[in-house]
Structures are given as structure tokens and as C-alpha cells.
Image (tube, rainbow, N blue to C red; front, side):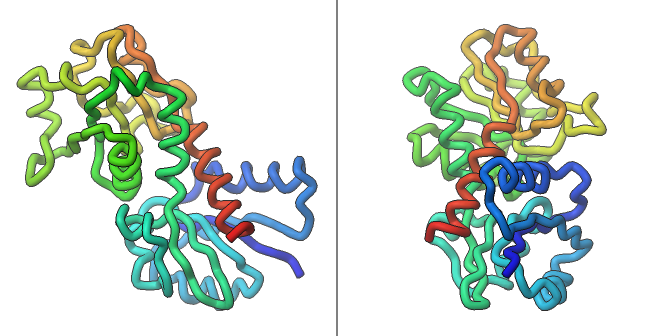
Length: 247
């Protein structure tokens, strides 16, 4: 029997997952599997999708449904529960079990990228579902963090506040969890004081298309080190495959 995996979200024109898994199935000679895109304009369409896709064994979740998926789940992995966001669902005997593999992909690649002895504090740009997995991974690594959003509030500072007090100098790691700069709008970037960055800063952009975002370029121009989100995507995808097949 054919095994179907897929991705839900809206929109999905930018998706990495279908190409990645289709190539994985081919290069690793994994037969009887296919990966589909399920573009849902509303999370309420999920129930109909599940009824129609009888061979569906699991699926990934992207913007904007990583938090909206919770009412549809029968069970929740403890890591995903603590994070408060789900990007992988495993279907076992008709039951939907939610997991988060984003934090695994991010944590593994971050440890390769930074000098953990030098990086003690991080800024997380954005407060969406992806940012929660980033925060959880930073906690696991013992790196304190500060959220940055358009408006200040409890636990948040605004971009304007970040520019006013030179606070960026106190944070060695800056992670962009927003979609700013994603193709087809590569001219966009988070509004931070790039001129205050130095060669002691690390910039991690979860955006992977284009390969060098304006956020990254602005940091590199100041001597900072920068990477995009491609390796994180690969890491979370492989972790999702393990969840679907090894648990």
C-alpha cells in the first residue's frame, strides 16, 4: 500500500519539503512513498483532507498552522507541549500525534555554527510558531534570550527600543524567525541597527531562499558571521522522517 506524507500550510509556493522528500525517496531507493502539498486556506479544512487522504501516514506543518493544529491532535509529545508549537504530525491507528522537529534542526546546526563559550545571549526576531522552537532550543543550550517584536510588551522589546539604546551590542547571537527577506521579496530585512554589529556577532536567518538574505548580507558587511536556514530545514525534515518511521 502506498504511503503518503505531506505538508499543510498556506501559502505553499515557497515549500522546500516536497522537493526534499521526493529526492530523498529517489536517492535512498525508498519505494511506495510519496510527498504531497496540501494548501489549506483554513485549518478547518484539515478534517476533510484527512478523510480524503486515506493513505496519509504523517505530515509536516508550516505557517500559519503550527499553533492552530492543537485542537485536532489526539496526543502531544512533551517537547512540543513545552514549546507550544507543532510542525510534525504522526498518524498512528487513526490518531494524530503532534511533535516538534524544528528545535532539533535548529539546535544541531546552531552548535556547529557558534562558539558556545562566547555566545551567552540571543535576540529572537519575531514571535510566531517558529520562534517558540528557537527559544526552547536556546534554553536547552543555556543561552538566555530576548524576543523582539513590532510592539513592546511583557517579555518583548520593540525594534524601535532596540535601535534607541544600543542594546544589540549585548547580544552575540541574532536569529531571524520572521519571513522578512524571503523570495520573492528579497529586498526586505528586519529593521535592526546593523551598523552596530561587529565581528563578534552571529546572525542566523531561518529564511533559506535566497541563500544570502539581506539580513545576512547586512551582518556580513559589518564583519559578523551569518548562515541561512537550509541546514535547519534538512535537520528538521530528517527528524520528521525518524518520527514517522522509527517510533
